Length: 295
Image (tube, rainbow, N blue to C red):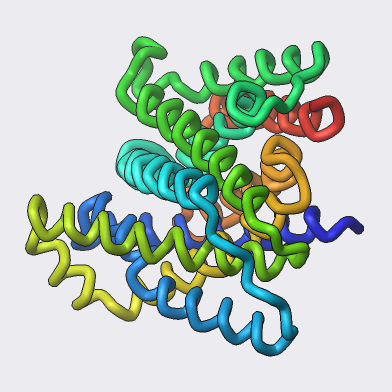
């Protein structure tokens, strides 16, 4: 099995657990922004230390942080912050598995964003699979109580997908800007730079806008530290995969997270999916499989 596939599966598993813990935090005491900050707070020192330790253990030279790398990394970090806030906000509106599926519009959108920013080509069959995936999104966008498909949950879910797609492509651009031939080192250096910047910028925002949430996040250090550890494993694995394969393929394999999220929703949160939601997930999953083979 190709290394980028293994990195993608590991990233998906860690990300599912991170979102599950964040769902608990939001339902308890933290705002969406604070729950997002929790994923960076404890992970950045670990990321820096582990990247340095790995570099010294392997004897690899650390890559030069070029202006292109810094631009891509900063943009990717900003997109990821906004995308995560959207996703965590969505958890209070819909079931866990459905929220993750809304977020998974990133899979279809990444191919389009990758073409615009990095020149990745989309085939005709791949475009058809993308369009089919949006049928699943429309099925999922109908709220449980009925009503128009144009609802707040649908809008936030699709926006999170757009932002995650932008984040993935710019992160791939950042990894390609590094000279290292070691995907683990490339992923570690990228992660260390990104999470340090994200911790600072979102921490300043919380200090100015939601000062009480900083104290609440620190007080919930047992839960937030778990979020950070899962975030560290997931993000490092994503970055390593991005350095080896284009973001559309990485996210296509990463859709195993959809299965993980359904299992977590059923076993942890005791959630039951309605037939329409199951149909929507099935349609979207079919699109995901098609993208994995056709994009």
